[in-house]
Image (cartoon, rainbow, N blue to C red):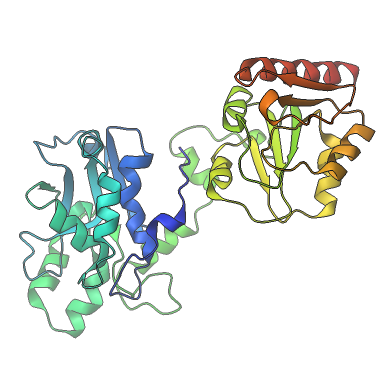
Length: 349
């Protein structure tokens, strides 16, 4: 699943660490974006080195989150690290506005440890413990050595077979210089070819690699992000490519749709691409709200390309012979017409 969200939702999030930015708070959107009942959250500075199937079977026992103890905490019997979390998403979704509540807590300028403080404070008493092998915080290696912290060093040395390796702190293995252990492990995975990774689980078929193939092309030019029934059409016609172009940037309600493989968005579009869309379009959809780009529409007409629209957003002055108006709720009818036109064009070509 490719879930998109408006980055403005995280605006104002606070962090006292230079290596934590506002994207760390995106994990709080999981109940809002992810439909599954159980979610495994992993930070971006993590390597999964051994099978972790058990994490998808562990009981929650009334807890909302399962997480490992924070290695460097002086109160590590209670304080949890949120870089690896098994989330009881089914129960979180029952809490009204849970994502907004957590994000708002993250705007507190006095948070000592950013998002992790929010998780520990809000879910206190509702966090079950994961074994340390599921969040092996090797990034504390240098901290433990140079600050002579025997308890932390002992904790790191006691995990012999880590399953999830977590490169916390600023000493990342991908830095130009890194002094901690297990840097080579990160680079081993970094340098693996995708085919090698896929082959571990299934047969790798390189014939499937290449450009996406679509049965036909639809073009929409707009000056506003609001386009009537666009997402429904994209969903009904997964084998049809929807090319949407603007001369400017656009709002998130349109950007969000790039999660669909058959939707292509071109903001600040250049003329070369406009001409390509006009040349390749099987159908032009005049379904945008706001003013029409008559110069583009005239070029579409010159190509004798069919134009489809809904009644509410139709151009009352358009007398083009191949201009078809559908009832405002007749999304299925328009989808069928698009398929019919593409089929006709394919047969004639």
